[in-house]
Every structure is written in C-alpha cells, then in structure tokens.
Length: 512
Length: 70
Image (tube, rainbow over all chains, first blue to last red; front, top):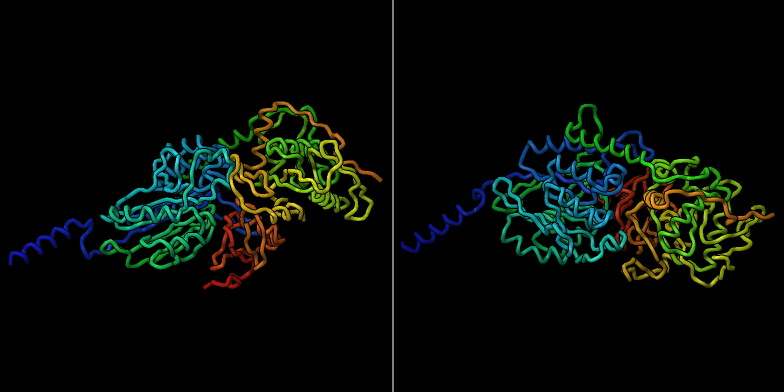
C-alpha cells in the first residue's frame, strides 16, 4: 500500500511537471520565409504577366495567420543582401522591417556576411529577435539556439548555415571566423536541446538536398525550416521522423506549417505555401511604411554624387570598338581583382555617361545586371581564343564584343571568323601561348555567357577549391566575390578616384 | 564543382547559382521563355538558388522530368 502511494505520488508529480496537460493536443503554427534578398516590392518576373511578392502583402498574411493559433515567424536566412532596397542601406532596411513584423528568430545565410563583419554585427544588434548560427565560431552576439514557449510547449530553434560561406563571399568578410559542419553541429546540440525542450526545429541555410541528408543522419529533429537553394517545397516533405519545409524566394511565398502536438511529440502536421501577390488594400500598413521609407532613402542614395568625369563616357559603341567607358570598367575590375588582364563583354555596358557629375544611378544604369567579378587563370592560347570569339560577330554588333584592360590586340573584321586576331600584347609584350595569365571577367562570361568557352574550360580543370592566404583559390581560380555586384565596386572605386578622364588608348585596333 | 542540368554535367564555381548552370548548359534562354527549373524531387527552384556538389536540376515545361517527382 505504501509503495502504491509512492508510485501514485510520483506519477502525479510527473504529470504536473509537464509543461502542458498530459494527453492534451496543442496546435502550433510555423510561418517561414527564406532568401528574401531585400525584394521588398512586388515585381514582375521575366516573361510573366503578373506581379508577385511584396513584403507588405506577406506581412499582412502572416498577421492574419498568427491570429488563428499560437505561431512562430521564422527566417531561414539570406535576408539583408541582394536587391538595391536592401543593399543601399547595407541591410538596415531589412532588419527594421523584420523587427516590425515581429520575427521570432532567423539564421544567418551566407549572404548575410557580404557587407563584412562590422556591418553584420550592427545588424545583429539592431535585431529585436535572436540571430542564430550554431556552426559559426568567432562572431559576436550570435546565438546557437533559442528556446521559446507557445501554449506550454517548449520549442528549441537551432540555426545552421552552409559551411561554404568562406568560398562564396570575399575572404575578408569571414576573416577569423570558423564554419563547422552543420550536420555535426546539429548532432552535437540535440542531447542538450532534448533536455530543455519538447520540440526541436532546425533553422537551416544549407539547401534542400542537404536538409534531406541532415534529416536522414541526425535523429531527433522534428522540423527543418530550410533556405539557400530557393526551393519551392509546396507541401512538407517527411524524411524519417523529420518534416522539411522551404518557402521559395524573394517574398513570393509564405510557408505555413501547422503542427499538432501531444505529450511533447508531433502527432500530425499540415503545410502549404501561400503565394504572395499584390492586392489593393491587402498590404500591412506598418510594413508598407518601412518599405516606402527606405525607397525614399534609396532614391537619395541613387542621386548621390560619386565623382566627376572630364569627358563623355561612351557606352553606345561597346559592341563594335574600344570605348573609354569599356576601358574604365575593365581597368577597375583588373585593379580590384589583381588580375593581369580583363576581358568583359561590351553588352554588359548598357548606356553612356555625359561629361560632368557622376551619380550612383548613372553607374547603376551602365551596369544594371547583378554581375560580380571573377578572375580565372587562362593560358595565352585561351586568351587568344576568347578574343577570337569576342570579335567573331562584330558585324552584327553582338554583346560578346570585348572590352579589355592590361592587353591590346589588332584584328581584321573582314577576315574569316576564327582567324581575325592578328596580334595580342599583354603588358606590352607578345602573348605567350602556354603561359598562364590571370584574367578578370564577370560571372556571366565565366559561366559561358555570350558563348565564351575559355573560362568554362579553365573552371572544369580547376579542382580542390579552398582558402589560401585569405583568398578562395582553385587550380585556375584567382578571385571570386559573389556577394558584391560589379556596379557597387565601380561606385566605390569612383568615390576614391573622385575625377576620371579615360581616353581610348588603342587597346583594340581594327586592321584591313 | 560539378552539377547536372538535364543529365548533362556542368562545371561551376562555388558561389554560382542555378542561373550560371543554365548559362553554361546553354539553357538560360529556354528558362526565359517560361520553362521552369526543378530539382530531382520535382520542386521548382529559383534562378538564384544555391548549387551543391552533384546537384541535379531539370529544365522543362513539366516537373515530371525530375526523376523523384511525385
């Protein structure tokens, strides 16, 4: 009898110590976004008839859904960099917006590092929600996880980012930081989280394919809210006992995952993506006010003076001959990347700048594409082949026509395609076919854009990417900074130069 | 880094995205004329989506191209 009483007392004590009534079902809603990249306003995708996205509309929908049941609003990273609306305030606009929307947590994405650690540190301090990065060592004010409670259910949210950050941003942005394997990190934290929480959510910026591997390898994760691969996971996926979700990109969708929990376990779930489209009156007024406020600031930044040109900068003739604007941009790219030469496509330069003041918006009009600088080692033979390709459609004024720096060449436009290049000099010396030169270009040409094959061949031959001497290196890759658009590099350079007066120097000479 | 576009191997730099893989495969124009890009499970992916070593993506009008699509 005494033993039975003790057992009964222990059972009651156990039941009362539970955070919610034993046997009671609790509904919790997870709202999630990822890879916003500062796309605050609705936009019309290429070849689409309708506008999509718009963070003020997403905020309104999130508010409505939060009223229905206890909820979390989570971000799986890559929020503060990308679109001008974010870039021109270095992500300050995005954090103010997220504060206003009352996010519960976010994990760092790889692009959160693109403005450098000082800026990122400021953004983390401005955030009224925890910013997570369990696998990042050395970054102040970053939390590995947070435990939050809804209706008596304790939910641990642990954040991990891809360990490829050091090879996808400039090395100076991650100097002194260490990125540990996300899978090992989550595995390490699981026992600690299990002791202190009922549910475990991994907020992941490692990409959907790796989310699936994480779910397979590490037991005990209830939900993975993913990002990085911009995947439109229309319905939640279950791998083992883990539910995986991801909500596409650019505020085009709000992820909704409803969990039914009993005795600290997920016993049911239902999820979907709410596609976001602008509707009259459908916006959240507070979010819209923040969007508008930074739009006005953006306009002010775009009107800022960056320097002055003493001559007209020719962006009209870049598809058929050397121009001073082509020279200037190619020179800046060579200088910034430390390359021997630059070869870019004239088609990447979209307009001219008149003599006088240069404003940010002028540079953005000249270089409107989200291109970044890459420098690749090419042999002299490959450089020559690239130039041959570049002049092969000059009669049609195609965008492939090269603008160059660090080299000069003569070509005969009337000769057969493939044998037009007559002389190539690098630093004043004849090009050596089997010598390697570091060639700066943009990511578009590096990927084979405008039909340039030489860069792709070099990338194919490049293995074992790693950080050497603070810079991402492959066998053939000397420089790559995917988080900094070329237009912003040009703006910064011109701010330093203050005044320019580039003249056509005879780098590209037609002969007949 | 090697990825596969419609089963064709493509070499890209770390940090490059779905867009770069399509340029490399000569398929970006197809994407521009309303074809969508899917991963191997039939999920649509954005042009700015990160690529991962060995990733398989498919360009087409129907997501049924993806082998593990449901």
